[in-house]
Amino acid sequence: MYSLAFVINGTSNHIVLYDVDIDKVLVKLMIMKNTLLILLTLLLAGASFAQNWNILDLPSSTRYDDVFFLDETTGWTINSSQYTVYKTTDAGDTWTSQFESNQEYLRNISFLDEDRGFLGTLSPSFYKTINGGQTWDLVSIPGVEAICGLDVVGNNTVYGCGAYFQPAYLIKSSDGGDTWTFKDMSAYASSLVEVLFLDENIGFASGGNEEGGIIIKTIDGGDSWIEIFNTEVPGEIVWKMQQLFSNPDAIFGSVQAINPTPGKLVKSLDGGENWSTYDIIPPNVGTVDYSIQGVGFITEDHGWVSGHHTSLLETLDGGLTWAAIENYSISSVNRFHVLNESFVFASGVEVYKFNNSLSVKHLESKNIQGLKIKASPNPVKDQLNISILFERNDHMVITLFDEQGRKIK
Image 1: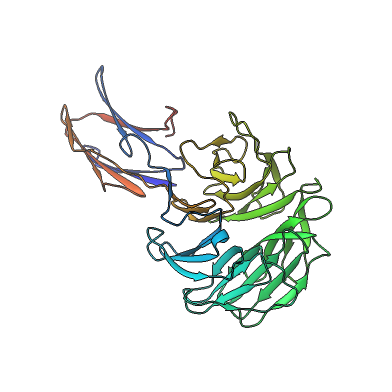
Image 2: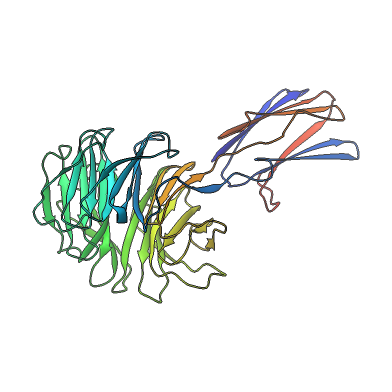
């Protein structure tokens, strides 16, 4: 949500503040003088909003399976097929190689704090660091064949699950990774890919069973589980899940289907009580991707998915319709990491960063028949202040339009 503050100076001497939940905004200022209409259009970001996915400076790879940020500066990613962990302390601008495993495919990475982190692989090897990733030690957990999903919650609680290729199990630590428990999950699932916890006790896991792709829920820290969603198509897997940062009741999941059935988005807006399913069939795309995996949303309506056979797909209406993002070589995304609507990363063939900032270019103070306008700051990220000095006794109407010319406010 962008907060556009219009500071009005003149005879009325008042301030109007609009909060607008849209992606691209045109500010049209209309000054009426008798029968004369003067129309001044200010387009934020010069020609358009700066909504870009940038490829980050990391070595080429078959796939980066995961990316995780502790805050808006410090994060880690894994070059899965080249067995390497990278760290950034400047929001992804530069990266440092930290660790190379023994030719084990790296699957996921997550940190409790700046020091304690965990690294899962598609082998029995599971790693822990206590120095921010400088060194990693093997953790032996009997029964683990791979860790496909990791989640950290609170100060000391860590959950993990596996495996997409079966069997299904859950690991848990309540003391920051010093000790671990292993739970056979075959009573609930045949495969598990993802864990997502809201706090130390309430959480979800996703994967599949004999009936279809599933989402299961626990309210007692993983001791017991109930099934809350099933695609009812055998062979499908609910691959990834995301909780919306601004609404804890909004949960999204991606469904890896069976060729040639298209992949799906599943969505709940009431904390998992009810679910909606949407086929992902973008227009003008020759190949329908059944292998949808990564899912990431910044509002209830605006989000992305990606899979092995398509590039980035975007929805602006909560999954009803999808469009392919042009001019970006983004593909094979396994993870979207969303901290807020302006801070999103995706890991696939490469690692990508979403730039949702605004930039006002070449917008100077203007004189139009006694009208003076200034806009600041420049560039603008969250709030644009437009000061208007109009020294005549007249009326002023400020109207917000979207990029299609539809009136917002």
